[in-house]
Image 1 (tube, one colour):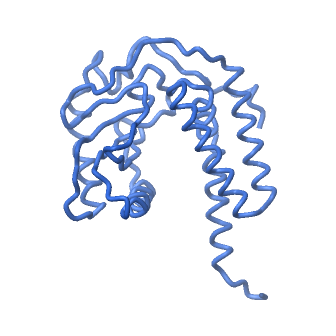
Image 2 (image 1 turned 120 degrees about the vertical axis):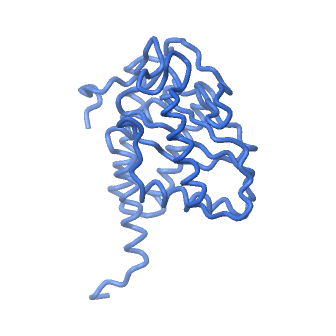
Image 3 (image 1 turned 30 degrees about the vertical axis):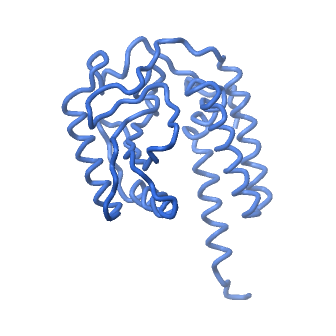
Length: 230
């Protein structure tokens, strides 16, 4: 994959929030109403007794000036998570996102369960439950360059391709974990416009993250199977 020839803008940036979702800085009423319905549907799907819901928020690129045509809506149920249920929440979240293909005005909606004790990093955070900003996005141009982002993306892609060539489940899982750790470090240090986060999004848009995830699923399936001639 030659990132120098990508037609996708590596660092999207606009003078306004996404007009499909926002009237200036006000979330459109029909959008908020539908997001509340989706959140309620997701909460029922989780089927957790005495779910301690603290808030329902949206965050990510579509709650900032850095959105693109590939950006989704990150919809978070903020709850008081019992540590013993962390894996259950993760499993339920993945199952829900795989089962339902939900869109708001042709924009994908991705559901998450967020621990209320977690320090969530995002350029903007909006409470759809309270209908107000929790973290107002700043209109500030990115400080990184397209070249930096694509160089970092090439580095990530190289790690992914090496992991696939290794054909080793432990290597593949470790590679995925490393990429997510690098992204999280970038978010914590430089926010959503960090080189690491933008490179990760570029890879995700190009299908590289999903390619590694599917490869891990395949190796896990193979490991749990008995082939006919074994």
